Image (cartoon, rainbow, N blue to C red; front, side, top):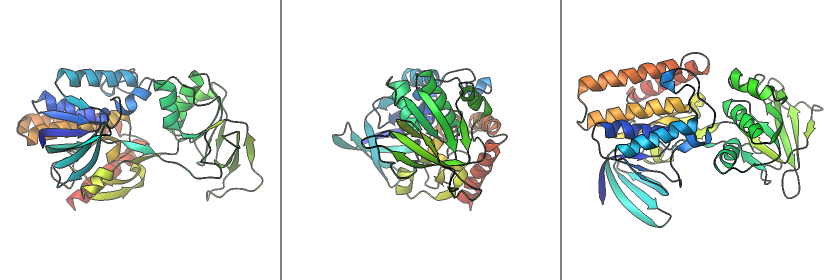
Length: 363
């Protein structure tokens, strides 16, 4: 059985950031990721981040991903791709399927679970037709593989994902016929909505999809207005000639490994559902198992990176590579940065939810 001081499950922003912080202090780190390329969601994000300099303002997502990969490589972090972690046992032993062939047993002193999130789907008549896809899948096709997911797009969801992907599909040469949302107001940032609106894309708020139409693939869609109780209003149907329906209706934390490990889970709707209770160091109820990024609650990539850093610092400290004084100083700097990201609007709600996770762990 192979043994490592730290294993990071997931080579996205949280997993890489945690690996880097630990490796900087001398921790032996290995990263397992099920995909054929590292970087997680960052490499789909061609837009520039905004905010402060410390939160990667004016840097495009894929450039941030490249910087993390280069730093991890300089520090000697091993990254295994096409490596699917299929189980964690007794909080230390992992079963890893390598390249869809052999299953290897590995043991870690500390484990960082940074498995991210999966897209939510909405069932409706015709939702299994080819052409009904998640917005994240459309983003992967366009930004990573250079393939247009369709020509005429209906976007369902006006959160940041729906808005950003709509804009990127417009840049790729697609026509976004409309953006609809059952909520009465646009859910994403105004700066993203304004970019799409300048293209002349109409927004239909308080509308939901009723059905997709087509024989072998999507050929059209019917949407309908909803009332304050989210019920369809008869007679308000609208027809759209589209070949693709993108669903941007939220994300679900991929907590399977944490639940398998018997980590304490708490239901927090604002964070995407059931997420692991954890302390300010990102450590879960199972000593030695940490969680960071979307698996611990749906937020932004910048937040995932900072949570990963905190976990990496904590792991380095717990293994004796970082003294308490330096650990507290560096961790508290990251916590202040997190507080800044979670200030105002939706951020305050997420901050409150995160505080509830800490109280749940202590209780």
